[in-house]
Image 1: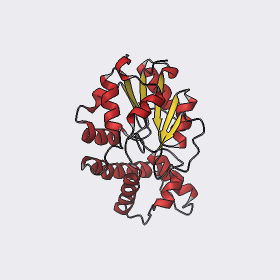
Image 2 (image 1 turned 180 degrees about the vertical axis):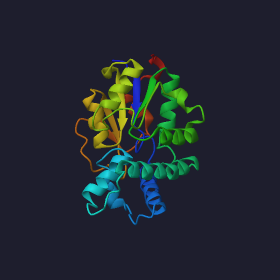
Image 3 (image 1 turned 120 degrees about the horizontal axis):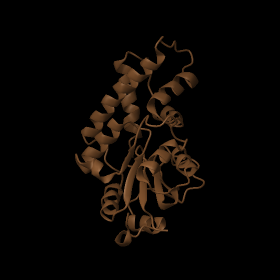
Image 4 (image 1 turned 90 degrees about the vertical axis):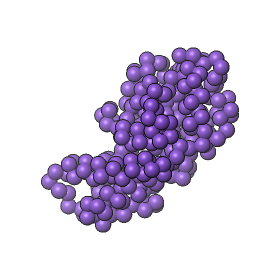
Length: 239
C-alpha cells in the first residue's frame, strides 16, 4: 500500500530537545524560589510521564512527597510550566536545538512529493512553533496538514488520543500512514491507533522496549534506507 502520510512526534524525534526541557525546568524552579534540581538521571525517570505539567506532578508525588502543596496546586503547576516554556522557547529561537539528522530533508522531500505530513505531540504549540520557525522558516506550518499539540486531547501518550485526532483531521486511514517516534510511550500511542511506527532512539530512550516497532534506528541520516524500510517512493507519492 502506498504511504499517504507521515505523522511526527516532536521532542526527541524532530530534535534532541529533552535536555533543553530539563535545563528550562531547572531555571523555572530557581526563578520561583524552589531548590529543586532535575539532573540527567532523575529526568530520565521523570520522562516515563508525558506532558510537562504532568511531569511536575509526578515528581512531587513520587520523588518529593513531603512538599506542602499550595491551595491552588493546579495554578502553581501551570505557572511553573509557563515559566519553563519561556526559557525553553528562548533556547529554541536562539537556534540552540537543531533538528536531528535527516529530518529537514525528509520533511521537504516528502512534502514536495505530495505526502501529507502531520504532528502528534504532547509538547505545547509554542514549543513546536519556536523549534520549526528556526529550522523551516516562519511559514513552517505550510508543511503540515494537522498540528496536534499539547492539551488538545484529554489523554496524553501512551493513550492514542492525539493520533486519532490527527487521523481525523487528515482524513486518512491509519493503515495508509506511518509514525515517527523516539520513546516507548510514543510507540505505544501510535500502535494503539493502528499506525505502523518507526523509532529513532536518543540518549534518554535507547534502553527502552520498542517491541512492535517497524524498525528502530539511531537516526535518519541514511534517508534512502528509511524510504526503503517505510515503503516510501517519492516519485510516485500522491495524496
